[in-house]
Length: 257
Image (cartoon, rainbow, N blue to C red; front, side, top):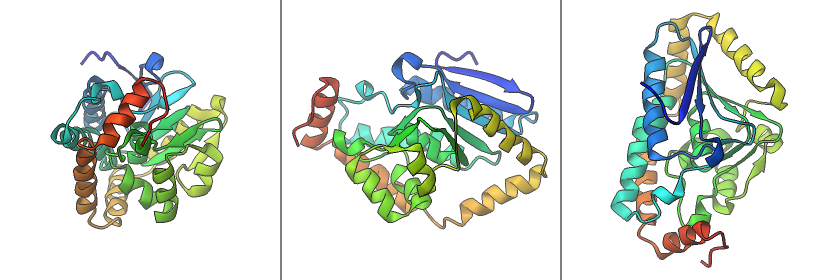
């Protein structure tokens, strides 16, 4: 498949998937999510691929969020469908992948961008990266698994503070929280990511797959949590705060909640 918004290439047995919307800070729109579903599915099916690197084009942003202009006029049902389809087709696909997927966080990872990184197995960030879930400033909550996966990684208190304030944190803080595995300088990002994948690739394929499944199972039954997030995310689209939050964002002003 020819991609409009992705660049896909192989470095030996490592598949690089690059979100290539640098002028939009690699924001996730409907087309990009569809291409990610296809690219990740194909990489998981390819016998020659032992690991996947997911990153954004340029040095400013991994993914700076969802493309808000696409859903600014959605109602509650459309909002719920947006979350459900995104989670099912992309974020859950990555989370449950039986090959290691590492997020190479080369800059801003915000909103849906951080949720994309959270779905990956391992996260490596550059020292200048900023991470956050600013959805409450739009009258929303995270809708691509952020309320669940962030809590699993950093604990209830840290997750509540990040989500309720919507504030960004530094890469150093993200490392302290357990949100990222490593922090490196920009020039070292892909060397570090590929060195991790090379070590994993030297191990038994079947054992790596089994370990991923077993570790994911340790999270217990999370279906209810994800369903609750999807439903509440959809309900936010029917609130006056959502209309004000999105209008303020598009008009480049502070919302008046």
